[in-house]
Length: 245
Image 1: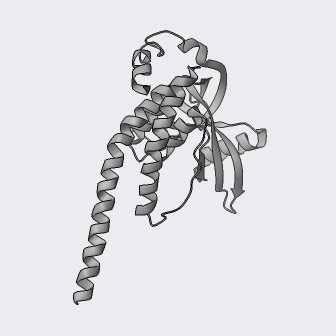
Image 2: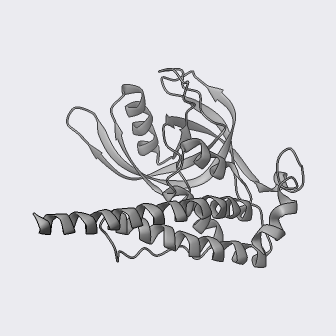
Image 3: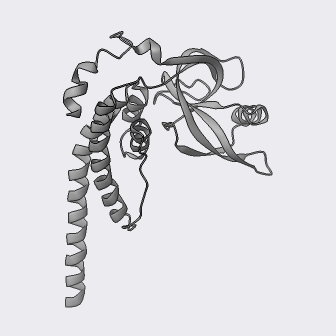
């Protein structure tokens, strides 16, 4: 049901396809940018150790002014001091900050709204840019509920197996009930390449993001189940051999 409902929406709700894309935009702001090898999703927490002087300055300014900074995934071919960010990132609010004696800092940032970079500026020691925040577009509740139900069922299996592999079987995690929040939560936890996560971040349709996650989980769940079965078999065989010795 989820697949059928959203198949015709893939071109309708994109910048190239026109449609309602313009309505997802909210506001434009000048924002300090922090290029990293990580994709931050709305609602996710990101621990950071700040040691470079340029980013110490950036964080000090943001913290003293109570303003966010932007976390952006940088391209693999980026050079130091000339980082090339992907076009979409996430606002990061500083939730907690600890200053060290030598000027370094440890902090926890929480992901907020996503933004699209309109222009980059390099006048300051750190990268900044004019960005435009955006949100997912409104959709039919039935579509979202159908997609969210499939994702939740697949992700529960995925998560339970990962926790079992890690020796933490029985650990409970409360999944978000809101479909958009669920889509970001699942994207954050998926063990996939950063470029693939970036693609999920850039989507402005919740059902499309959920559908992509369904495809990923349908591939990952059988693979992890196979690895788990092999691990159990190895442990049993190992135990039998130790008894013989």
